[in-house]
Length: 216
Image (cartoon, rainbow, N blue to C red):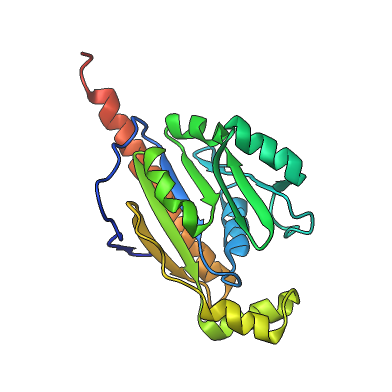
């Protein structure tokens, strides 16, 4: 079972919304295997309605085919962003990514929502759910470099530069759980699934506590 670490909280934490659901924000460097971990968890939990995997809107049409995403044009993405339908949006390496506000409904229902996001937007999660957990998927520098080489998108020098500029997570208000993904997928994936099941258990307890409160 992965262990939660102290958060990098600074300043005043926003007031938590009145929802019993949990938001799990998945972050990590390129090559860490986030999509593989998410795919493993989705397969393990496919029949469990307590879990919702957020679908990303992506403008890059050669995005990882293993990720269940929605491809769109830059113009369509900009229109969604301007209309306020995206709860998260960010850009990286010439590609725009977004997650729609529809994830707020399952959070209100007490479910666990899992979203693959940029570290630049994790601070926005505190306003969305009573409990926010950052799942930091990582791997050793040697493994990261090997996986990036296999993808074939960058030269050796570009890979070295990418790894060199990898920055620590920014200050945030959620619990932090780090999952190493150096070994077999079943190990890292199993840790992640255990984390999600624990979040579902906590959400259920919060819901039961709210039900037990007398009406005002």
